[in-house]
Picture 1 (cartoon, chains in turn brown, yellow):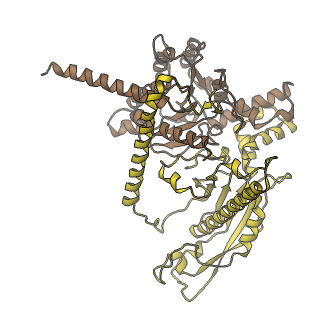
Picture 2 (spheres, each protein chain N blue to C red):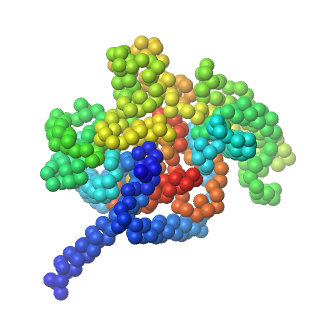
Picture 3 (cartoon, rainbow over the protein chains, first blue to last red):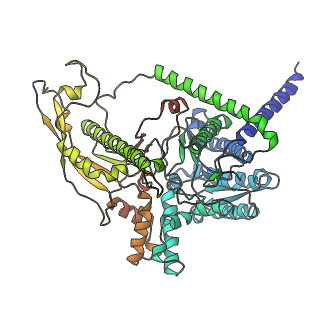
Length: 283
Length: 299
């Protein structure tokens, strides 16, 4: 009997994997979002609730990221943006900041390597935000990750780190003003659309090349279709505020990020499909 | 060629072998809808609707986003080929929306005064509320002291403690108008509550001591252009790019009347059709409320 447990376990895992694959296949028959954003909140509370160290909470959070990313990639959701580290987070304890930097340096690099997720699905990795604020060894790792995945065109994973939406908007305004001062545009060309397209996350998404603009909203491909924030916090917290300001569905879920998975994502995607179908019939 | 919206195909590219599985996707949605209904029923039966305690500290600034339940394009806007009957239907829908919007804001203002909220900012994406801002101002100025518009008619002594201390009215005073020259700015009204004592006036009631004037701000529908307007101003004033920081943008945006609210309430302006309410409740959308001040706002 003891020897049947590994067999039973393997069979159950296989069945679970088949069921998940079939479920994802069914979902893919309906409309799917183009750009989803995740605020991965709750790693620390999750760790404290289980008597773990905060660093372990972040590590478990990375596993959740991998799981969620794989679901999104299997569904061919072209752009995923994750809020990995806020500019304000540098004020956290040095140990925690070091743990997060270490995760960014090592675990994200794993994703980019041969045979792993990003390569398997042809997804480019882009760090958006004030990369110059990162420690040198992390900056080197970022450069390597971006180089390794530069040729991938099927999707993009934007890692917002260290990031703040207001800072991103200010940067886009500066680029727009530079365009005017350098003669590449006139004052009349300063429109919401132009500044929006200068947002770093938007440029990363549009760089995939085949995402057409959204004429109804006069915005380009960087607009978020769905924003998910875990751990029951109902704030944007300076994450992609402009990109989420129109008809982005906001999902503030109770689950802590390390526990987030397909069972949480499924109702979100089903809800989005219903929204698209209803919109298609004019409701 | 599958129809698309902004690059998202409403119908994905289906192959012949996918078609037999479509009923299973439909079944998945039926299960999702039914489970959502059961969950809402359970929540409705088990959640008690208690008023917050009177020690409740209200937020200082409440923002309201009032998206229309019907798509905006079916209400506003005129087509060249519009017939007379279609125009009449459109105008009727606009009037209904306007009535709903103005009524919502008046109720929100009464509630805010009662609860001690200092500022209410309201955004309505189709523009009917902003277009009716003068009507709103005149409605506020003629609203007599009256009881709550609540439908409840509880007997004296059992009514809401706020109402039992007498009546409240709203008296509008033209406040600072932050309209820009092109008339697309924040429209601000300062509302002063006043109290008419009655024989039920309760000297132990402390609520009237705390009644404050309310600043009611009607935000223009197209607030997404705000950043672009500020950018054009910065270019016109010849600012160096290095001096353009988020603090500079923030100062200008707040000066234009877009201060950060403590909480943003998203509420459809008009009720949904019954059949629509049976489907899972849609996730909230900001629907064009100015994004810059929402950095740490509870939604």
